[in-house]
Length: 440
Image (cartoon, rainbow, N blue to C red):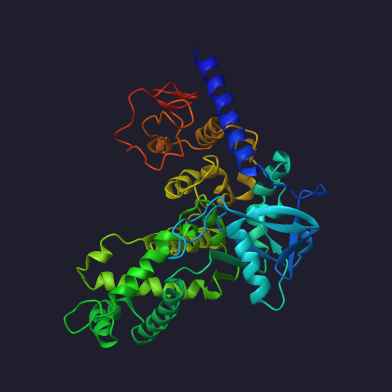
């Protein structure tokens, strides 16, 4: 009975996913792709424009040959709202000529191509997933998604496209650059944590962040800054985590404005100083830029692990052994609150953080033909096989009727909440290989 039910659920999973795919491609032509010859082969897009028409020429290269290219990080189905258009127009598309063939791409991607072909004198080759991967070839898509980390880490630059300007974003970026300069001045004057903690409030008054009454001097600017992070969907999507967390030179592009990762981080650091000053402004009670700090901290910790085997915190505290660079359960739990249009991406988008030798395990290989329930079950079986501890069961949440129908001991990573280790569902089924005394 359970087997039949599981088969039916998987069939419904597959059917629903295929219906969504057909609807999204309805009325759109796809580029004519030549097969990639090698496993490390990728396509690069060369963008140009003739008048108002956008053009793209595809080129096949091998990553092992170290080609020069930029990698694009963006959100597929999103556009900013403006006073002239209150709808984000998520499903809008625009035509572009790919190797002479007229196809339609998402409006946000078309906005990016439109911007760089006008803004930049020389447009470098780009790797863009929507164009450079044959989205209708599940086998190719699986191989390319498995190589995403290598694709981004071998790029000469990563460009993060946040979308066109809206009514406040240009002013927000100008303020961010100003706050970045203020933060650098503060760090130069007070280089130790002890000095920072003693002087931050007085300094915030001195430079005009607070007025004479101890209130934010330009509150509207901070409202716009927070809204910038709340409304731009790039900050909330699951795939952008891996694309951001590299050591590659990275720039943000919003409309025709650019800023660096360092500029962003130092502006956010100023927010931390304001919070540390004891401000009671309700604006800071729900802080949307915490996600930026979490992501940057994760990025630095991940690379410390890769380089030294230990994080800076662990080295300071006297750890002398090399741990697993980044346990899978921790990675999946840390980012399960990020959104994904395909629930399988809650796993697929994060596997690049695993060491290559671990990613080669068949249970962790990306297979776009598998239903969601099988992907989540494979992850649970992998953790069961590789860990002698069962703490990953803390990620199990109460069953979701609309989610993938997995065994009750399999964490549903599409569920953004997590059950407490001390509040496990009492209906957990028997876990293969687990006895009352632990893992067999």
